[in-house]
Amino acid sequence: MIELIKRDKRAKRSVEEAEHDIIELFAKIYSETVKAIEQKYNQEGFELVRDTFMRVMVEGWKKQYEGMEKRDLKTFVNWLLDMITSSAKYEVVEDKQNSIRLKFTECPWADAFRKVGYPEIGKFFCDGDFPMVEAFNKKIKFERTKILMDGDSCCNHHYYTENND
Image 1 (cartoon, helix red, strand yellow):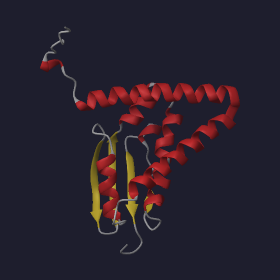
Image 2 (cartoon, helix red, strand yellow):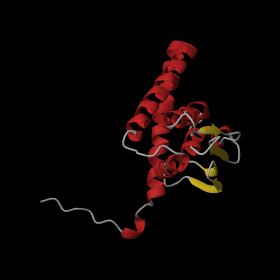
Image 3 (cartoon, one colour):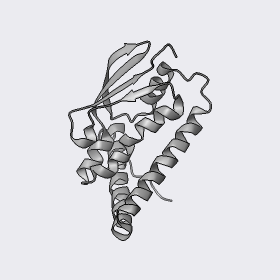
Image 4 (tube, helix red, strand yellow):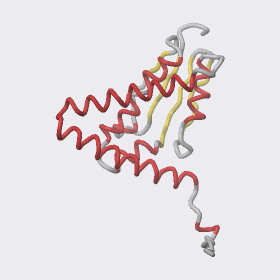
C-alpha cells in the first residue's frame, strides 16, 4: 500500500503563483516553437503561426459568445474581466454607459513572455484584443495606446460605443 505524502499546508503556493508558473512554462514552450518555425521558414513561418493563433483564438471566443444573450458593452467588459487570469491587476478608470476604460498594471502574459525574451510572440495575445471585441459586437470599439508587453507602465484599454448599443 502506498502512503500519500502529507504536505505542510503552509507550503502551498497561491493560485496566482501556480498560474504564473504555468503561463511562464507555456510562454517558454510556445516561444521556442515559434522561433524554430521562424528559423526554418523565415518571416513567412512566423506570420503563419501568428495568423493561425489569431484564427483559433477568434474561433474560441465566438464559441464562448454563442450562449450569451446580451451583446452590449457592459456584458462584454464583465465577460472579459471574468476571463482574465487571477494574477492580472487592473482598475476601472471610467464606467459610463457608452465608455469603459480599464488600466492594467500587471499581466502574467506580459511578465512571462518578456522574461523568456520573446515579447514579440507574446504580443499575439495583445493583438488579439481587437478581433476579440469585433467578434463579440461590431458596434463596440476598442482603443489602446499603451501595452505592458511593449514595456509600457500599463495597458490602457478603452471600450466604447458611439450610441446606446
